[in-house]
Length: 172
Image (cartoon, rainbow, N blue to C red; front, top):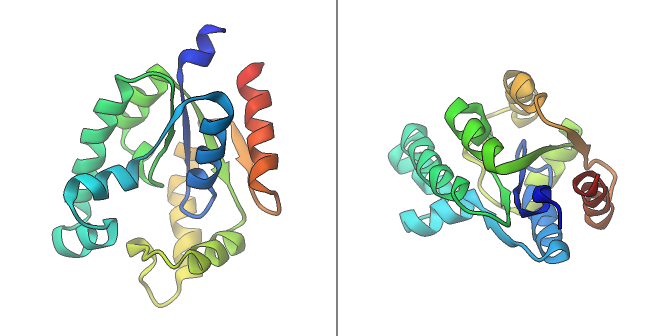
């Protein structure tokens, strides 16, 4: 097994791009454990991410992200699905990049909106009058960060197909 295959695989990208679903299947395929940072934070905080945002604020949530990132960066053989804004923090990006291979999952804004609505998960950053415009705004704000990593488009593609592409990337 190559040294690359002992490293973590980090899936970043905007909400609704399939990081968690792809991560679960990818982890099963390569025999790694799967960790979703938002789920881990909710578990530790004892409340859903949306409640952390509404009760404690985004700053508290980002503090949780920083804490779990430090811990996960010390581990090996994980597939890590990050929250959409986690890699915006330079320390988080650096920590996860040192011990992992990072990929950015992408999707068309209309697909993101459709997936987010279908999931039924409360997305605090999209609790606005015009969520489609907010998606465009956040994607523009994060474009430079997301652009640092190899892009894997998930629009119009099955989870299996995306995982197949990732497997090809990590085996090269």
